[in-house]
Amino acid sequence: MASSEARRRKQLEKKKKKRTEKQKELTQHRSAGMAVQLGRKSSAPVYKCIVSNLIDSKGIGVVYFSRILDSGEVICVAFLVDRYCRGVADCFVRTYTRISFDEMLEDMTKRGHSWSQKDAATTRRLIEDAAAYATAAGVACHKDYRACKEIFGTVDPAAAETIYEMGKNGKPFYIPGPHTTMPEIQKVLARLTERFGESGFDHLLPLGGASTLNTMGLSDGEEYDEDFNDDDYEDDHVHGPGCGHDHDHG
Image (cartoon, rainbow, N blue to C red):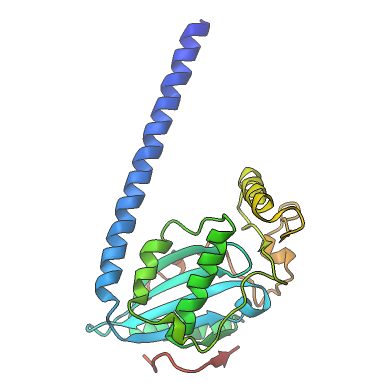
């Protein structure tokens, strides 16, 4: 009986490993295809680069980098950027009409989201600096980041008009996402401790079932879902000036 149970457990583990490997292979294939598609479109004119003002006040927020295509459509990559520690926590690609993209930004403003329009170089540098900071801290960025950053093309980050500080008060400040499991949190904390020592970084863990973002003191008007569900804008397909100097909204 014990031998039979051991065989069954071994078979289940083998099937689980096979599923995991298959899923990893599919993810890598999809990511490679995304990188190729974005690379082909990275020479299109930059349209709008939008940075949530939460990046300044809370260290984490959404950043949009978009280009206008020959078809008149706008291709946009949205990055959830954590400049305090986690780098690019999420990212996805969407194609919009010019009108629907602008309507999406207007809707964000109506819902209380405050954002600024930045130059392309600043936007790229913010995202890449955050990713590099996370990597140096031993924290992995989102699996699609490498593919999504192809949207930057030849934009020179050295030409950035604004440079954002990474970390908080000179060191990493780790705040896990609201759905990060405790084992995942413990792994990150172990890496940070190994690299910086116990006093070389700060962290804030969620209390009970509350969202981590809520523990940071976000008002209802500023709150957003860190699941970063791109289906929220599934119908979006844009209109307005190109990337330029800062323009505050909200």
